[in-house]
Image (tube, rainbow, N blue to C red):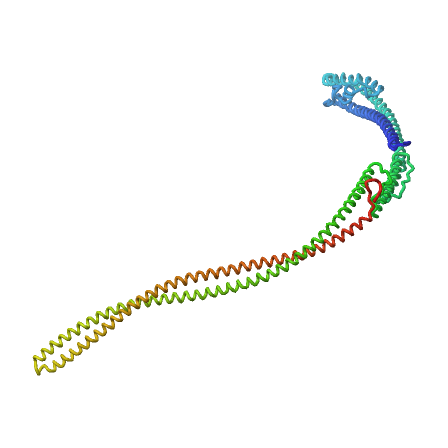
Length: 556
């Protein structure tokens, strides 16, 4: 690979990185100088402010001391040379950050400053005792020293002004240099970034856009394209790879289409025309497997079609024989149904007649029971007649006794009337009438007794006949009940037989329906078998259109 995107990008990124490092270093150096000049400027400014403040403070301090001497006022200033602001700066400040010139001036100021504060102490101590001496020290020592101190402080102020001006110039120069270096580095970075962007746009973005646009055709299933990218880097390799892949896919698709068209036309013996590579080998293997399985399946279908045709013919002949037998069986079953219907009708009539006979026998049983009951009542009546005849016999016996006694009385009355003579003739006539009446009563009683005896004999015979008749009727009743029971059983059996015959008739009807259904099914099976045989022939005709591989490399 002549050029590499990775290498080109890394080179440009390295240039940018180096420029950033150089800019950072230069900026750091410039900022360090700026911070140093800034600190020096701040230090000089602070010293300048301290010097000015010290001048003013010591002027005020001197006036306070003068007032104390001249007007005997209280001195409010400090006699400690380390306690004032100037003393703290002189003795406590870090001289490493102060220039040598100012340090020399500080060394000159220190003894003068100490002498000023020492003289002030002496003046204050002499102010009450010896004012002239105090005034003399003030005029000859303190004031001249203060004037000298102010002069040195002026030199410090002048020196700090010069240093501040110098440091400001240096600070301005450092800022300018740092700004120029930063701008130069930024310019270099911008130029390198523009070059990188130009490289990315021309060598990466535009080729990728071209590849993307052509790849969309690939996603749409269009393979008649060529990606034109002049790059000799990875993108160029990608474009050429996609072109080769599209061409290879087009060849594979063309070969697969030819194979599928051959299969659609019934040619299952076509051999592959290309050698597939990579993962496409699986497609070739799958196509070979499909063709082999189709060959095997079609061969088996041909064999099965022949077997199905032969079986269908056998099934058709068997179904026709079955249909004919089922038709004959249906006719016989119809005849059997008619016979069973006639028997059922006869049994139903027998059952109906048995039921009517049962009702008649029940009526006879009721009449016989009624006769038996009346015979029992007649037997009881005969018993009552026999009993009444016995009582009448007793009454007749009583009447005979009465007639006998009456006759005796009539005889006695006649005897007495005869004894009475004429006076008793009327009584004798009555006695004769009574005797005649007694004789008639006796005869009537005897006749009645004979009749009652005959009646009793007839009643006794009637009782015996009644008892015999009652026993016969009881036997008749028992026989009638037995007959009635048998008639009921016959009636019930006839009803059950009629019901059973009805079930048999229904079963035979169902058998007839099943036989008829079987007959229809057999006819349909025969028709379906014939249709299956014809369809098997159609299937064999269709399979003859396919060219199949044999066990070798030829077709058949």
